[in-house]
Length: 169
Image (cartoon, rainbow, N blue to C red; front, side, top):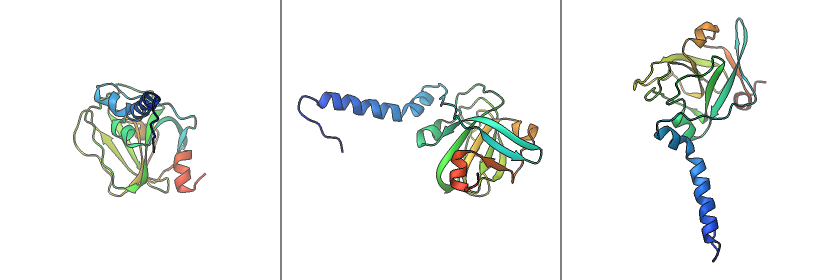
């Protein structure tokens, strides 16, 4: 609860506006037609494949505004970069590529850290992209990355955000 004291209410109001503004910056940037850039997480995400481990540097979208904006308006990103969408619980999810000019691979990951489905996203499409089962995470990579790196359904994904839920280290 925020209390306003006489003579200081303008300072508290300004602080409240600053907090609200910072919480909605992801939505605001995307709404203005500009890409949202989140900090790169210090821990790499690793896919464990039949041909070895493949690390990626990731941005983490773990709140509603960040998940909503995602990679919208992003023109490009490095081959070793991706965005991990973290949901508060295992659930049915659906993505679309409206306002996303870059083709993507979408890896749908279960609570156990295993890839449940890999789908391709077409730029600017409003078609819903979804797995056939509920998931806890979605990893977006540049289109063709999953095939090039031999990432398959059933492969394990390791990252502190995933490991905390899956129990895998």
